[in-house]
Amino acid sequence: MQRGCTQCGECLDVCPVYRRLRREEYSPKAKRLLLEPLCEDFADPANAGISWEQSRELARLCAGCGRCQKACARKLSTADLLAAARAAHPHWTQSLWDLWIKRMGPAWLSLGYLACAVPGRYTPDMLKPMLGMAKALVDRSVGPVWATLTKDPAAQVDDSLPVVLFPGCTATHVRGAWTKKAEALLKAWGYTVLSAPGFGCCGATMHHAGRFKTQKRMEEHNIELWRELGRPRVAVFCASCRHGLSSYGDTALHGAEAETWKRNVTPLSALLHGATATQQAEKPAQYGYHQPCHWDVDTDILWLKTLFGGQMQGKEPCCGMGGILQMENAALSRQMAKACLDGFPSSVKHILTGCSGCVMQLNATAPRGVTVSHWLDVVSVD
Image (cartoon, rainbow, N blue to C red):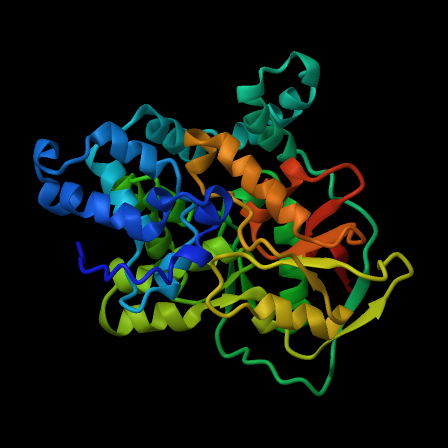
């Protein structure tokens, strides 16, 4: 574990949890100060000045967004530190999250419909956030297409490698239309698209949950499938999936193969060079864009600007999805989502994003009359 926080405080204003709670002990730098002695070499908690129960309380107050690491001069990740704390002291919520992601995906849609049938007035307050997330699994975002896309004949694309789509958990289980549309776009652009129905979860959410062995198995499965396909380009339309997959090049792969992997994992929008849009009458006069936390370089925001013009962005950066935060602190997760939505001007009724998790999270909290969609929902291909 890398130590050496200088307590400079650069992480405070970028941490969405600290922005909400404004308590010093919940800031990334304070968490490091408290947890580093506890986690180092799995030291005896009795000598650390903080109990495992107290450390879990701190772990419940992190969305895993990674913004503190980006702001840190030493690139220290408090989310990774909290993941290590969870791994060293397992809790039943981690096992439940593991089960939800690994085993229950095929049942997500059925559970979503079941949640929709539960009357809100009979739902205990502590269960409302979880029921809201379950209801969001049911696709209510199907609406009018804003634009039909065509490729500029003069645009050049690099089709030297075949492309395989990595759909991620959400598209695999409850938003299959995203994968079909992404495949249609790639084919319209002239790419050779390989069939690969066997990809699983990228594993990033397992890391945040401290389920490192599960994460490793997921990584190994996806990498082996990629090798069997001949190491093609991997197109991704979810920012969180891109973040998780990109990390393979630093953890699970080595040498030239790691560099090939990093080079080949590509955002879908970055492959659609020279897109022109025939806009439909249904396109709203203005729209919002929620920028996912896990983009290093957000190609979606630039691409959407070329299609639809400028967009309104919210004041609160993180939607609060947070993976296991849904299990460990659903109320905080929902509070962060509401703050994110409230950060948009009241005139914005349509919000686009490029992250599967953000779509689910914001849909679970969006007020009546506000729609939150993946950008794949609002485009079609000629």
